[in-house]
Image (tube, rainbow, N blue to C red; front, side, top):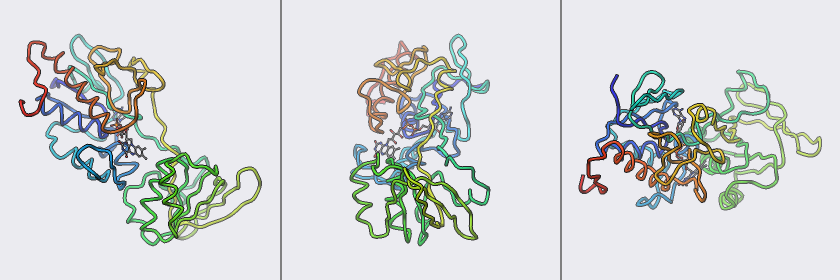
Length: 316
Ligand SMILES: Cc1cc2nc3c(=O)[nH]c(=O)nc-3n(C[C@H](O)[C@H](O)[C@H](O)COP(=O)(O)OP(=O)(O)OC[C@H]3O[C@@H](n4cnc5c(N)ncnc54)[C@H](O)[C@@H]3O)c2cc1C
């Protein structure tokens, strides 16, 4: 079994940046991702959104950001691999009884993704029209679609789909949306967008080429029925902290507790990105990049105590 200097668990944007930064420092690294593709929330929730707060990119799509992050990685990326167990030996960790690493960096974000599903029992025929991810809005050109949900993901998906589809209905159980007001304002100004609130889906029925949804007005018995070619459920994702607890990590407010070097309570395990929580933290990609640099610089100092750590890439 090869012993890697560093195992990175989670292949979202922060895990990818950490992999590239560790590579720059000549650390032998392996990065695990449970899904079949790397990219985390950016890849699965908003690949087509233009992100405007990544340093040096005035604007970049989620998809291109992930492609850029992967571009120069030569270290081992292992997809379709869920890390279930981490066991500590004297001076290394064993991952799933299969891999050995001297140090671990957790970049598990919100946890392995499980979209919250519709609270209605559906048949296989109905499932064909129901989507829990939205990767390519062009696939739905000229269709009649609905997005269900009231947060940023629902509004982002609606904004990406609206220019492609014939008609888009945004369905939410409350009159107010939790997502960005600016996104909602943009949607309200689009001619092919209809906002249906406060309604909850009550019944689904598959027709030959479409799905019939019966919606129930919240607070009374009024029912309306519509047909869609595809519906998108943006009810959020469940985060699974059970594994973190199982690994013996100390948590705070749902995230991993870290010190200023991004070290967790377990010596040799560090954590960065959306997986961690501390006062004042904001879930932003650029912040996660910075945290990864802090963690890896400290990992270097621990792994090679006699080596002078070179901070800047120009001197590496
Ligand atoms: C709709 C929306 C819009 C956003 N817009 C912006 C924006 O404009 N700008 C910005 O800076 N931020 C934005 N964010 C926030 C940003 O996406 C997150 O801060 C960022 O994705 C966090 O990256 P991460 O790598 O820490 O975690 P994630 O992106 O959550 O990735 C974690 C990865 O780890 C994997 N994983 C988890 N557990 C395991 C395991 N046990 N084994 C293997 N793999 C595992 C998961 O499958 C996942 O791929 C937005 C978020 C949302 C939801």
